[in-house]
Image (cartoon, rainbow, N blue to C red; front, side):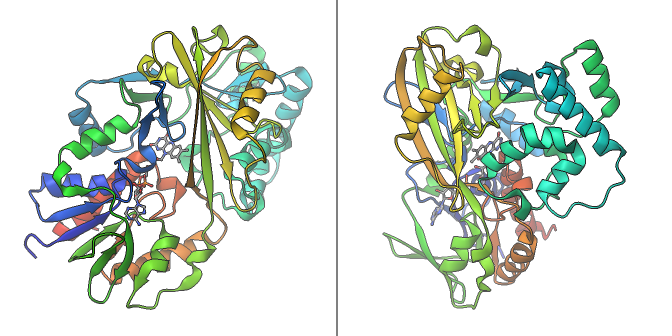
Length: 441
Ligand SMILES: Cc1cc2nc3c(=O)[nH]c(=O)nc-3n(C[C@H](O)[C@H](O)[C@H](O)COP(=O)(O)OP(=O)(O)OC[C@H]3O[C@@H](n4cnc5c(N)ncnc54)[C@H](O)[C@@H]3O)c2cc1C
């Protein structure tokens, strides 16, 4: 196959990764079809009329791949900041640095004792293998941390019962427990914050996270067709049908459509219909722009987790701390995120006002805050939920699609949360090209 016609659906990081690699290898005969008027997908950013820049939820770059790093450096040309992560959890009126279990000395005494007791018990107990995420939390962190942080927080993020979720996806996303270290930190009242793959992260100077993807896309801008929604894929005859402009023939197809939607729009071959068993949550981002200087208690914080069920958002990010250009001069910005699903819908009423009222009530916003900007956007597909039995739906479906020459990848194309960050998804596009061009597995 020399210069076959490759069609890529979606100009998010995964689709752009595929297009980048094709361009790098000298292929010209490809096209990227994007439904929206902009590139970047869930990693896009928006500058609103008041001059604030917002991401679709807290996005930081912490890559696992040298190839991704070199692409990042090549497009960003030094136009980024490197930040030390400072993330916190608000529990019982206290701010506790992340990782939570290493810093429980910050909690009020009764909560600290409950958390430490649970940790000790969990580390002593002979372990029966947990059967779901809820049980895994208790067996790893004990009942105190489960009750005061991990259970309520994860219920908010996933908007789904933890008893119906697996835990095998956790890997490097959740800090392990070191009981000696915890008790030493308690004795010395020492903050211990350096854990994790994102302890240091990168962020563009201007234009938010989306700036990365605009710069990547600019390398092959003529190959991207925005406002082009794919509405059907005829597998037998190898055509994709577009909402407004006919159809395009392909030899190889790379798609980043949500897998459940993909299964609905392919024609010509019978697909297993279990894709409807896949579960996801939506994310709603509410941004608040405030006049004046960032208050002292937030000046160095990156983001804060909120397990309290009375607080509608699960996380708040001080986005103007990532880059001063995210807010106009003399202003600062706070971005909150709320998950929802068919099981846990968004709270009723004016959600923006609800968020502001709560932020004032819990002291996140100062009482005299002068709010100059309110931003809201929702994405129906926010988090691919790692449900029990997920892989038994996904793996046969992906295999069947591949037999038909269709590669479904990306955050919702693969539906594997543990491989759904920007670096993972970009590399899934690169790896697809390596596979079709060189036969790499
Ligand atoms: C709240 C939140 C926080 C996150 N935080 C981080 C983080 O800190 N660090 C990190 O690295 N990653 C983070 N991510 C993940 C990051 O956003 C994803 O890795 C990345 O956007 C996935 O890229 P993708 O190309 O797989 O999918 P998407 O970004 O979803 O792109 C898919 C594209 O396909 C298009 N499309 C859909 N349907 C059609 C159609 N029918 N026809 C044509 N085009 C279509 C969409 O418009 C979209 O542009 C976060 C995501 C969310 C939601």
